[in-house]
Amino acid sequence: MSSLAEPSFPYAGPTSLREPSLKALRRVVDPELALSIVDVGLVRGVEVRQGLVRVQLTMTSAACPVADVIVEDAHAELDRALPACYAVAVELVWDPPWTHLDMSARARAFMGW
Picture 1 (cartoon, rainbow, N blue to C red):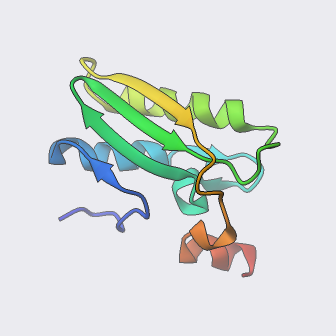
Picture 2: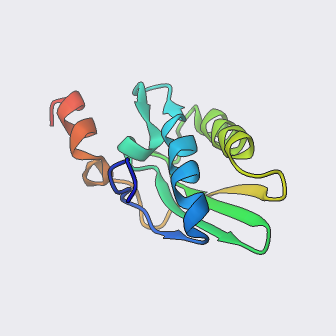
């Protein structure tokens, strides 16, 4: 069993890569909120298949000024955490749109919601 709380996004792929992927994404911080992108609810899904780790992220707003930073940080953290035989692709998606309900209970408490 994982030592981390269950993420709010779907994961498809080898069980052995699930926790390293989650830990890597937890290290990515939304610089505007000072919270992990996992806690903010920006991760929509992770799929590992045929040597590719595909991550779908959303932002709290289409006008997010730090979207590029978050995407680059997610890519770098996954690239560091996973075996070198895996390529990493991080994609921005907008459907479904992000809402405050996507945040973890911890993040909502931090924000006072």
